[in-house]
Length: 472
Image (cartoon, rainbow, N blue to C red; front, side, top):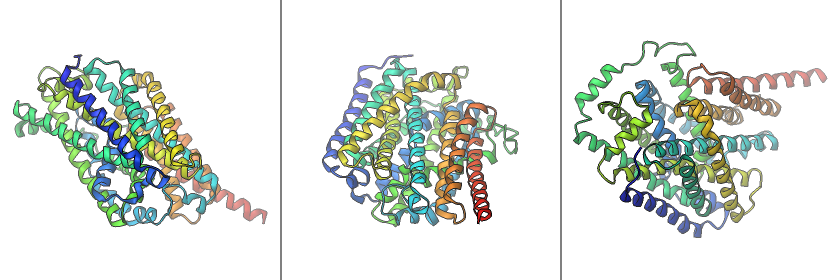
């Protein structure tokens, strides 16, 4: 479509320079692993809560949530209540459990509970999980940006990825959280600004919202129990709950923020802020997606091109702010993922035994993510929907890790052999289901993968106990 004007280019470049500067400033305080991965446990609830929210809220959400609204209607809204539902188990069990640990890794306790190989399995699975997530995030933002800037997909992926891996590798956790704050307010402000322009131009009003919901009801099969209906109340609620529990209870990125808080109370307040901020942003994106559908003459275009047309209809400079917002959503996930992967490889596998090596390791992981994003280009061209890919691959692969963490926290009966091989089978199922099963509900993959991981762990454990008792 169109090419960026000078003002929009200046805004985008200014944003990139600001985040690089934050990384350079923060690098002076990242002289040891405690500073590199936890910033000395100095953060209060507000920056951590925003950081939890924005690190989980990537360009995948920015692009996929409105696209889903535009193409399929309001079914995706079933995910919103889950932000509140997950708070209880997090407050009751997960935050207290991880706060008692002295390690900055979410997975180190598995060595004490089981053995070294189980801990290493969790670490490897997490690194694979996050590499995939970052690759999809890079692709999603680049896909959107290339639609209305004319800049090639490969170029955008490389520029965005290198910038994020540079400041996160040199600045560590402090740079990650500081840039997350900046990125949140850019994202929030840009969405509000574009909606304000839409209201002023008459595209969005209470009457138009009422009309949209009246003409876009939930589908007739929304309450179906069929596993083949794209999104239902049951699959959406259950699948999103599992995906969120993996995100907030088994993901090193979030657990790292629990550890970095000054106290357990601050960590809990951070999760409350995360839930509130996420609900506000997603509600605004709901309105954003609806607004795009209300613009005359664009209904026949693909969702990304409808969104691009909406942005390009904004006053001069707003497109530049939107580009900065999309870069912010992208980089918030990249920097957090890179720092978290470096942390677990340093703590659990002793690969990076100093802050200097940790910074180098973060850079190497960033390069791997860049390569992954470039490889994804033909794969995503075949799949089409970023929303579907995020749920099938990214959320689905988090289920075996959640299973491993939950068993480690709560089970006294499942053996080390059971949890180790059960988790591997769950990971294999996650990959196989994506390759061989194409007609399941969007959220069904994560449900199946968790079920396989838990049941396989229990069955293998029971079988190993039976064999031991017979030998005796």
